Length: 227
Image (cartoon, rainbow, N blue to C red):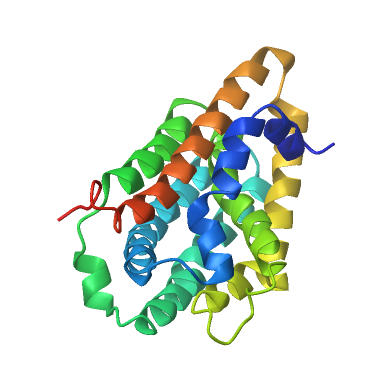
């Protein structure tokens, strides 16, 4: 069992709430209200900016050149590839780059990204990678699950592009590399004395990821709309 799978097994309730959140299920069958997804896209753009900072921190926290190269590659992928793809996806939803850049950050977005950065600042590279894992590796698992839904690739499903992007071989390879790197770090630094600490980080990061989906859902509920 990989270290990531061990973290998941110790966080089963949190993980299921995250990967099976109603927001994701509604993307699979195409029933998600468009304002919810549009708001998510805006916040995900701001999220990518903060995630780039986390990868920059991972370079600083790296104990070896190989780890530094891994962090630098992740940073480049976000800044030079993923953000451009995200802007292109947002354009299809009528969102301009200026709208993305000027949008106020949601509390849920700030909570998760601040938690990830704090985990890295307080501890080592392993703790930072554990905090990043629910997003980096979890999106691959979520998209794979959604892609199996009968309506996921239907022409009328506006969310099929998002699903295909994360279920596709390129992102699946990103997730596989992240999982393998986590295993290598765990082999060096995940002592029995640290197990409870690392599980706690993973659980909290997973819970905050689920809140990110909930953030979008609240946009279309009368009791939870934000101005």
